[in-house]
Length: 433
Image 1 (cartoon, rainbow, N blue to C red):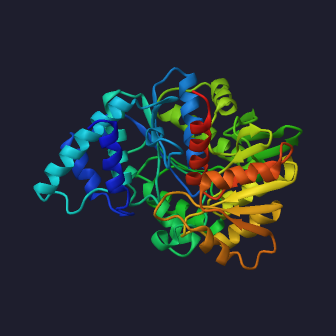
Image 2: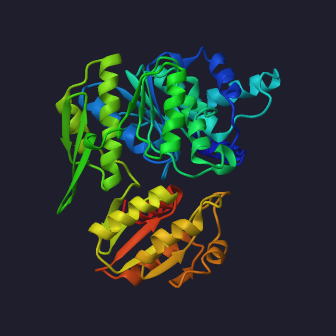
Image 3: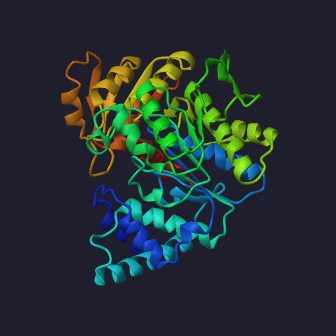
């Protein structure tokens, strides 16, 4: 398939929805001689922070001279962003070649009744990443779990370390009503004897994860078990953090903005230290350097100065709280908020956290079948006293926000990484070649 054919093929499978289970992925990978077993990996699950933790860890390995594979989701502008080696996105020609191989093999397996239903969009990309990492002989792969953990397509690997970042109430239709139930699904990535790094604060969720680790005799490391393990100090330009682990002290200021990134960085440091014990030695100074030089798009990312334009996913309560705290501490006013969301999010609660920050809120949408329309959002915001405008066209909404903010104001884009991606597309397409 060429580039356009690949794009059309992905569009046809994008609306297959969410399907849990590992049978499809295992059958496909078996047909390709199990590429996922040809490289070591670290599996990272959680409600928030998993992409950032993967980015921190990838940067750390880059500084050690290793070839680190990185699989994340969702992408912002280009689907190929999900699959990288180091900071290099998979080449278009390679992506199309591997996707063609996948499509042909899937058609063959479907005709032989070895697959009962067609693989989802996420399953396709996960298998493609495994093929690419095996072909490129990466030294290590960092894999971000898509949703949950127990039945996620990434969970076919036997990782060197299993990481669970945070637990919050999301995807409850699929993962369960309580934080403990959600934690149970995410703890499905824990393997017998494989160390677990846990950054979870909620007591019930933490207990569920720790109990599962004990059942499987997996060494358990609770990052925030003791109050003196982690400290933060506010400075003029952000926060400075101290993390202690096994008698070592790490002092750092992450390359990613926000108080929450200090906690994500601590999770990454602990993971790197454990990886250094189970895999190859990693130097303390380069671990800290990696934390301080990591860049990760769409997470409190500044893309313009006049007006200041900030992009952040903030797709659930925990993410919205982190964004709200950062805005209150480090961003001047007035703020024009451009907001869009998936239908399955706790929209009213997120609005309660973010909308009071803004002088004007512009509701829009992004082109995805699960996206909420501005009118649907407005109905849910009936209790908001804030001035709300509806503009379904993302580009028009962005232009409106910049005009209302003026050169001295702030435009905040939040509610979904899909929205952040649409804004980045608009900026890229409007920039001179």
